[in-house]
Image (cartoon, rainbow, N blue to C red):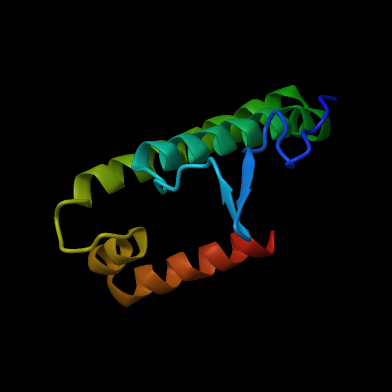
Length: 121
């Protein structure tokens, strides 16, 4: 492990400067970006897939695991096609708004219940 410097900086930490009782650091505060958010979500999805696939094969076996993966891939394809088809159809800027415009109150409540179930799991 690399040693820290006396001002608190290390290999992954910014250098900290003290001047007249105020602490400054060398980090830039440019905020997030859309490409950074996409990269973050993508790495999370790939990481979760890599971590869960061996456990799925261990619990279900080879053939049922392939069936589950194919069913999930089908649902992902249908969802992406749906979103691409109806994204510029209405005035919504969120997934919940898209579901509300496409399916009315039923779609919006269904999405909320699905998200609640995913959060509980």
